Length: 274
Image (cartoon, rainbow, N blue to C red):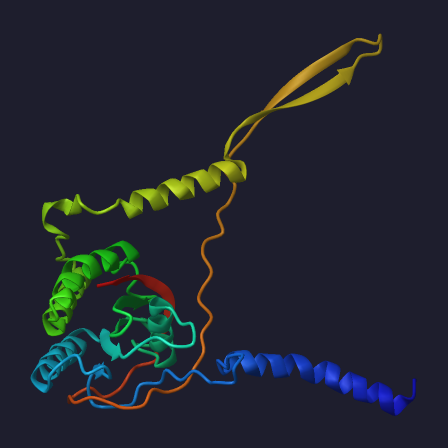
């Protein structure tokens, strides 16, 4: 093969992986559309693109969130959209919004995104890595089911969001008491999760077994020696959600919030519908 032709093949061999990497890091889909999830600065922490709130309600939520951010540095963002597109799920999109906009402080990752999709009637709470110890998936699901869903079904989005924000703040302050009556009508997701973990550990090497070793003596006799072995295998954990980037259009009213602080999201939280 001529030297010039060899150099040409080598060039494309080196460039092609970089080309693929660029496609994934920009969030470009098969249809060529680039997903954009950047939130425009509006001086607040509420982006009501779906117009579910009136100006007074939006102002009240903004002031509550800004005041909480000023006193704790925790950034809770509320985003409403008309509908999900391009195959996105409500929770992956909420996580993407949080990560793209770096909601939360860089040294604490203490951001939270509450996302509503109007036409899909879906809700998600996504938390930064620093909030997931307190605002667990179970707690997030409880808040969605008991604080948001009933009010959303009645068309009162302000009351549902306001109640959910109050619950999240109480969780972060260690004052959340859960659902009255202990949530007995809810499926025990946490217990199911723990049971699955135990089963995974058992099937990955947790059960003991007999290891038999056969030994022949000098006179031809066979001796079977049994050794007891066992123990639990390791558990690898969960993978993260792949992130992309970009920017939303539009905005909302509010005042006093200076901008996000460089936080990152790890995929925690929950979703539901109404």
